[in-house]
Image (cartoon, rainbow, N blue to C red; front, side, top):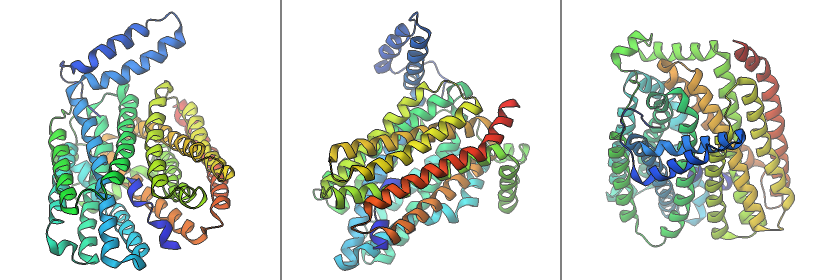
Length: 467
């Protein structure tokens, strides 16, 4: 039972430049129309359409378009890859041990996020973040091709070793991607840059989940791995087209900005920086609570499978609705004009609380309506997207560029630890007759955690706002 509910987590875990004056003609008309609407006499209407205009303007710059496209391709490709890895692992061990194989695949995916916390942060802060992104995609393409060799899939352990290295490349991608955004956007566009990146992430999750479910029984393993290698290569080439307006920290600038060349000293200095900056520390805590939701995803999968009895179709539907909700939630964040600290604390608290309330409602619905339950799932991850956009934007605005990689490396590692912990706890308590009760209890606990975080952060946010 423990490993059964761990297996659902693997497939669901998962910026731009204004240096040039070229435009993508396909979006120019949309931006002009948005600008026309924004001239409305109503102040509220003006701000509303101005936000959409700013968001759409990100797609009028080739460099911005390439960055967001590469993010979409990478996450979409991972969804395809993850499904096929699970299928192969189950085929090796047999149906009787399928749950154990799923749990091992998930563990190997999360392990590098914890083990490589000091290394990823050091590399991302020490070298060009754009180059780290590019190399992570080319390395992923090369490692996927190794799966075409028969011995790579001969037994479970060789499969897990290759999967481990794929996960390492993914960790570098996640940290470098989040750290690079302030280097290619100015502060006035950070909010919209993070909104656009999260919209692309949500669309990739939705389309990737649907595509993986559709292709799983139609394309052979070798063919899919070759497709994934091509897509990773395409993502790397696309990242190469991104222009960095604010130089990332290279070996020379690292010393100038106080980042030592020693891995140990750099890691300790990054931890001391995070410890001294209480505002950043509180934001990381908020994101840890948010990452608990990724562990709670096994709940809505259990609701679809056990309570609603939807089978594979229901699992795919709920996964797609999760991605759609994430994209729409990020899009709704265009209404968040002010980034004042006190207001953002309230918004983060409301977002986290809505997620908790969503899981309570999901449990109370029982088996009444699959589509209503799916809508609740979409709303849950819409709230998650808003929290993610606001919290990462605040980190980008207040964090020092020289330490940003190490800060976000800690964020990624602790987030992975939270997901693993929640998944393990759910595996201990979930059963055929406890899904509804567990969903309600988890929602209440998450709401309490949101309120507790808000009280803890109140003084810090108030002090930072006054400063």
